[in-house]
Length: 285
Image 1 (cartoon, rainbow, N blue to C red):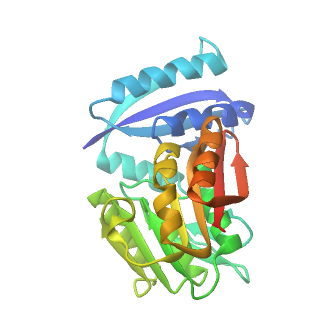
Image 2: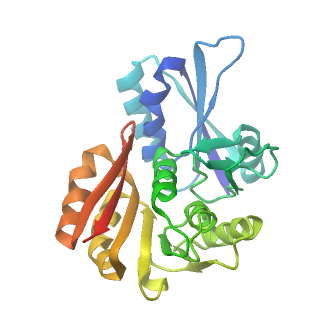
Image 3: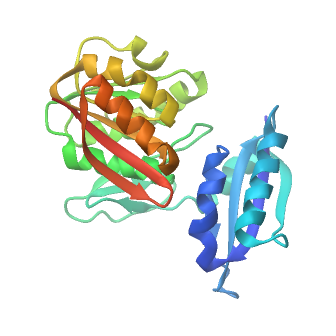
């Protein structure tokens, strides 16, 4: 499969203004700050070269022009899988989330500090390597709330990062589910890489259909519409006092998700905001 490499050069102080535009069309983001021009930055993203990509690019160009002005130039080039993976390997560096979590690509060295919980992540061709603000926010909420011995369901697991975080924070049993067979393969590889295969079960399935029983925590870093749709089922499948931790919520749709929580029997416990994105934790009363 080929990929569309999207490149945008812009003032460094405008990075936060355009990051979410890339995420909104389904692209991850990497940022380069040229040493020769520290006030400038280069933002790059990638989209599969498939049906619907032209529409996404048109939307991105329109919104970039609205933020940066009509002179802003979005450049697009076609690259193959090997070039795409090579670029991400070069740009994906260790980074910290919350107080203790550190995400480290396996090809990078990292000297762990006392108390660090290190997650080795190979993004492969799946979504969710911790760089999206809602993925990071979900990780931080898991860090705050997961306790030893709990049972966790991770819906739309992608690379498996949230499931792995839950296991490394002490969850005794984690069910990780995705409807994309590529994501299932990548998640299984990452679970093995992190030494938690004995506690994390990765399955292909639709939402909660591939899980059994009840959980202490359900996490879903998907989109607001799906989070709202599944809220009643999640509440039914949670133990009393259990948490539904959700990401992928644009601030414009936060009220919709909060209303869905309320109608399902979940009380909003906490929210984390990063730019235009919100992660929410709801508790079953």
